[in-house]
Length: 345
Image (cartoon, rainbow, N blue to C red; front, side, top):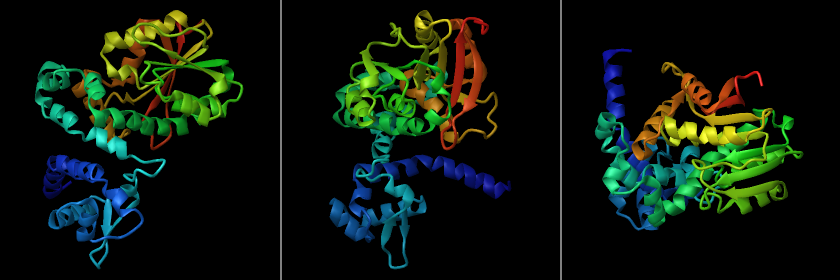
């Protein structure tokens, strides 16, 4: 890489927050909905969203440069396939996802990253006076978008997981911290002989009845509410835990795994679905996975882990890892299978 390219790379990184804010503004003003399938000038878009024509045109140019819009020689702009994901009328919409991760409350916490690095502590409580989840509960916008963003993220896993692991060997799978049940519903739908237990806090499972019913699996699934740090329900021979362990420190993660260890049968299996970072940054995972790792620290003191670190957590909790695998692209999540005991049971 030449010196000019090095400088351009750093220049792009420094301007990255501006790109994020341009997308955030497009999401908040529902620019994608205003475009729909049509082409518009900046002035026409401004009239549709009630904004300044000149500034809106500048925004459109920036979004076109970022690949969210495209501009014709006539000056009209149109959504690209990427930009169309911001439409709220699409079943695969990422509108809420974009809203949540660019929310001013989260951005202000990221603004204190230097303190996070110096102390190791989350900056969100220091900035806002309460934990992230307490803040979300009291903010109408975030409380509406956050569950949707989680479902949008879970949908990708739900599409990939059933074909990536042999669930047919089990009678009952318990999805620990399974939220609205999208992943469990997909697993049950793909395995008609399997029963399920969905376990999470009451607010998290509020939409689960609709999710399970829509998938046609409600009659094979029991919904149980509770706190994963306190206990988990017995009755399954496969315990699935996705995107839970990275929300806290090692002691919290071990506590959750120990709760599973207490109720899992000797022949049972633990399946962790989480980003497992390589021992070195080797390009095998997208850069967003490392930024997401840092994000967990900023908002709640959590962290991602390497394969060796996951194996260490499992050993502390009484499990032995037997298999690591990656979900197919574009997912960057790992499947980590473990057995109770020393691996010979």
